[in-house]
Image 1 (cartoon, rainbow, N blue to C red):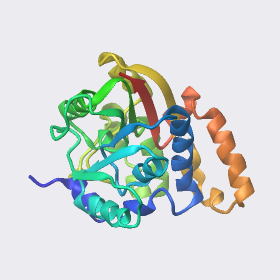
Image 2 (cartoon, helix red, strand yellow; image 1 turned 30 degrees about the horizontal axis):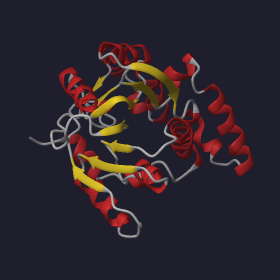
Image 3 (cartoon, rainbow, N blue to C red; image 1 turned 90 degrees about the horizontal axis):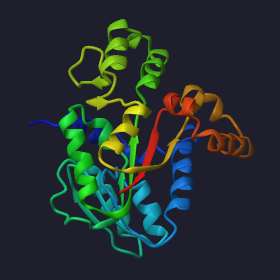
Image 4 (tube, rainbow, N blue to C red; image 1 turned 90 degrees about the vertical axis):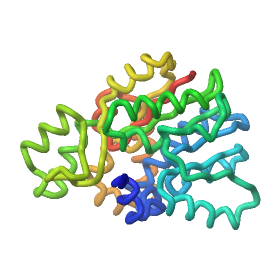
Length: 264
């Protein structure tokens, strides 16, 4: 069966997404600041939707033992190419995050679930993803899941392109959180948009203790052109400000990307 998410990413340069400008960098900078404070000792880490490896390489460069997987073949090819110039080895695999049967139970200290969850429009697939992440995670390990907030999405796409300023699309996103590749007003690919309350309830449902919940980029996406015009010092001021408020509940719902961290 054709996978429209894979098709979308095969045509997109994911390797540029978090590094091409300041407005995009803040997502990565905020995330590694939080995670580096959390993952302080050498750990075995599964990056189960690694993209082209920006987080995998960050943690491997710091001495962690990283396994990088992704459902998109081109992403794994990019990672393997970069690895040729690295002094360490990293296991890689093309993998659907709803089926991690290639790994034994409790194989990893940390599971980075940084991409697959918000591309699973069926609740059964989201449950499989969480269950598989927990199965391969050691007891007391960290499950780190990224999601896209439901109430951010429509206002962002509608103000970026008025073709999406559509009442039916607005109702669909806010009421179901679902976007399908064959929707008349599809602006991306198969995607599921969550709420912070839903994500916390999901973790509680699987007996995962929530230990952190933060906005990766906050309101930055809404005025990226201004941010990209700032000097390095001005951008640092903004990054420090964002980091100080990134756990505020109102910011969680208004952010483009959010991470919830739990302990098994």
